[in-house]
Image (cartoon, rainbow, N blue to C red):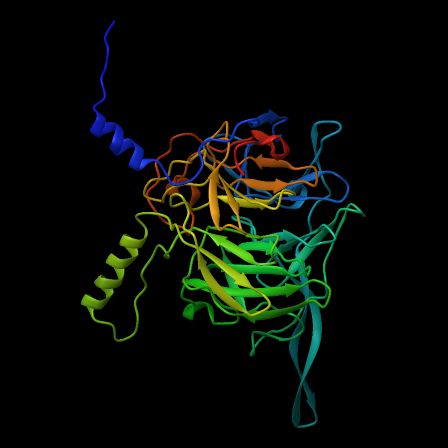
Length: 425
């Protein structure tokens, strides 16, 4: 038998390398339950007052090798009933519809008059990849398009929507009245506050209403708050830095926390009057920022409309998901280190907002990112679908990067009973 020896100095180096937070929690582990009917990734999850867990949006893999089918229409919604341990399809999701006006020319004698008259309603499809969605405190699941949300009412088992803004066509091409978001964004994070409002944070996007030829995809540091009762939007103080494909959740202290993410956009577009040297500098900066995910954490206080930096993540992560459980702690689950290092991770980190402290939880059975995550009232934490690979050539995504095709979309679902955790306090 060969015996290997480790020097005292090596042991010291390993000890220094151990993260300064508690190690693996004991007393509980992830358990696989019924899988989704088909692999689904970049989806969202929410819990209903009816005791069911909902998964919706994203992309579905029906033929293998990342063949994408939209998780929309009849494929929009799945519901898991813990009593029957089955996933069943929900009712088809409608488009977000809004009134449209068209200018009509009327000749009266030798004069012309212009009148705006209603035409067939317009329609937008909700954001599919990295859906912008959250459940309000009435457990209605709001799912946003670029002009407004549809929502699923778990008590009525039906879709609905608030009134849409009015759109004027040629020659104006703009929304002229009604509730409309200030920004178009993708890859934003969402969370529902104790006030029942939905907080839409960051992402990549541009100002709504800009002519298409002038749109520049930029990294957003924005915070936009949607009030589902009043059907209004309000812009709040921006984050300290922009980020996309990151996680957000409210703590028991009423503050909004954002975790990690991707700190750039994947392309550099020409700017009027810019020198080749300046464009190259911006390109190099984009590449530098894309080499790894962010490890920064920020907290937003709605009472003061201010952001503060909090303790950094144990290690950088993007495309992970966060959920708060009844124990008051926030669970950050899965993700990937960077688009240049596009392997999913099985990490689970538990954040105590009162202590500003991270501890490690039980690792996932299957590494995943782009998954749905939700914690139910009984302390069950569900990690749903996602993928353990990322391939830009097959995704055709705006995220960019150079992933390798190792793995694929996941149908598996696993659950952690957070009430059984020990060693994490």
